[in-house]
Length: 132
Image (cartoon, rainbow, N blue to C red; front, side, top):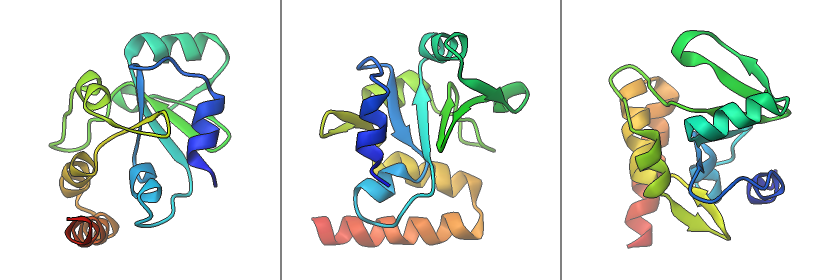
């Protein structure tokens, strides 16, 4: 799956989105990702919803879906409550596409705390040690 190509074809406005979830791990070659999760501004979320993206979930877990892409305007999980605009503003740019920093992916995965998240944290830590 070419995450960067798929996100680029969406032609999302700069400064209003970033790849999150396991996407940053895939883009750094840490492990593959089955889907693409994007964190977006509330305005962009509403615009995409009006343009025909299907909304799923309920309450604070609502998100937009199309093919293998899921779009969120918030990323609240357990005790992890980041400010979406801050995640977007602090994202690294890889080939013109905004990607949430691996340090934030680790914070989220630590808060979620599932076995697979803890394994991902270890993979990220190992990657960061080899990149220094």
